[in-house]
Image: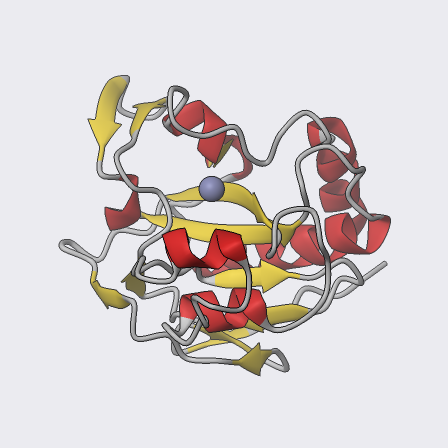
Length: 192
Ligand SMILES: [Zn+2]
């Protein structure tokens, strides 16, 4: 049994904070969905500080050919979960992080399609390349974060967790075929 982490003023307790400037106010304050992503920088390579650099606008465009194309992006996520399960938080959950881009989602609660997922969702990045199996430590950490979020934000429920590929299917494929949704559910049950 793993205790869920607490949330204070939009930040997970006992989690490293690397504040990103890439955020702004949520238009209505609603927090009712969660979008899962994956990222590795350079693509396919794990470890290092380049994801943090990207989210804090410090990525060196000369450091890798791929970086030249993305160094000017202004993007962020609320939380990054590394391969070993370590979490880093970049944006308060009460603020809007810039992770989803153009997006559409069928809201099971209202029965309506909605756009602008950044407005009301939380974005969590798993360090991964979409193909390599995610690590059990990542699922365990993700489940703990999700349980803490669902407890803190009652409008966010396990049925309102989606993936970037689902909300931007023509542009995005993450978290990819390697992500085991059933195992995530099992890890969430273990947290209860
Ligand atoms: Zn994504």
